[in-house]
Image 1 (cartoon, rainbow, N blue to C red):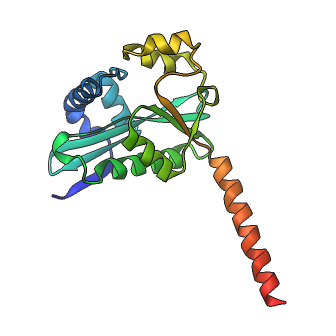
Image 2: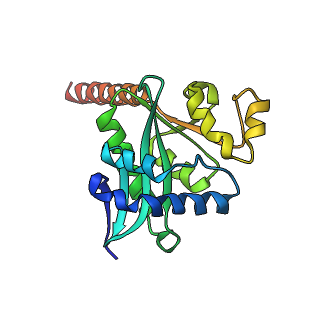
Length: 197
């Protein structure tokens, strides 16, 4: 098996229908909703270079795409799916890492976020430097939250004024990581100076 993880482009739009099928299957298995996307929407993400596709030869085995919110100050890596036959092989991690890196490249100042009920996705997000946050730290764009309407738990979100639900909000703030790197580098420099004395 030689699965390639690529930034999708116009040459991959023929896979859009199958990707939509995989998203639907995944949503049904989890018993929660997922924002339904049309093949046209998926194709648009590919055409604009805002998607990652996993291919085994000419077979699509995974996918994820980028959405921007709040005037591009927030980025969501959405629609992560992996075909059943390719699960538990590290492909989800490779897709998520590639879409995360692409998000940084396209929107270096944006906060990257997601909401999920999946333990595996939470582990991947944590490994990438995300932290759990209340929904109040995420985008306030109504269009994002409208994507939750297909979820069987949408009434819980509404009852809580979109402040909480069964999903966990997770956020990667590049500013926090820049501060950590600066603090760590400053500490190392101080240690080097102390050792030189």
